[in-house]
Length: 406
Image (cartoon, rainbow, N blue to C red; front, side, top):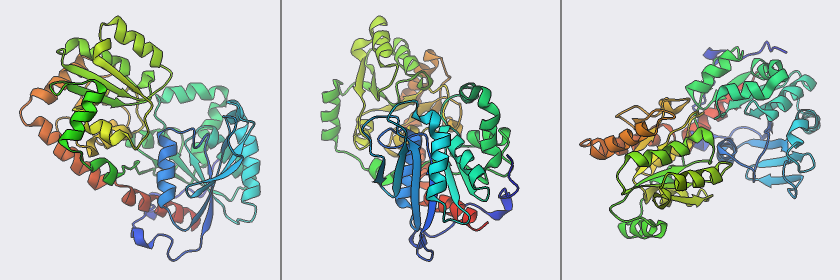
């Protein structure tokens, strides 16, 4: 199904409202959000949705998602969103979301003459949003793209439903992509308008707050590091796409005082532990496991360089948080990373699947005169200028208001 009311570029869909005026002069408007999953089952996309909606005023947000996990409430309020879960608490719930979710959405929005629908990614939730628009042809659909895996994975997962996957993009009235990379993908998939590149944000106050030298020393000792160690930190899901195995292998090309600190959990945890032991690097790699977002700023500030040798990346919020925390960053030129990482200006590039390249980039940060200070200074300035939540939320508010006025 195609849509004739695509928002053209000249509508100025990005909002420029003063944050103090959001919601001040308008009645609460119901918006329905479709997502494959939501809290407590979260990744970067779900975190960004909560950060955004918690700051948006004047909306009555309802989300429909799959239950996936047993024991979760069928309906509950999380932040500014009333969450409605479909299914019986099993992983296959998401496969039935397009039918059950669309019907649930129709019921929730039955009194809305021109409902605004918000799809968090073009996944199972996106299929549900598409099905909802078939039940309510007058609906206005915002598609937010946060995908971080290689794009070919999504085509493979869609399989015989690939044509329906493309229809999500073709039906959308507006697309918000968190990077230029994902905006280009939207056009290739058939979106007929101009995607708005609105990135995820960073909690500037939280991540720019410094710690004392004593606290930093205490944290490093607790992790098993000496003051003379150079700590390469990564905050990542332990999966192939984040290149953590390459980061561990890079230690073989670096002096013994270079160590790796890994905050995160995931499907590759056991493999990475085995890799560190096989390579004789066990004493130089510290696995912290899953840590809360509130713990992350201190973990970053106790370290020296942030490294994530991603194979794919929608944007890479962990990089931005590290920049805000005052760390130089090393990343690969893939996906949305080049939106913020300019080699030698706001970070240093390494190459994917190339541990020696990671080691060379690390030496460059440590040894090139003045580079570390330049990267820290310009990285912090960039995050403060472009990635604060208030400005980002204003723009998303503008997109939602533009949809409501069509």
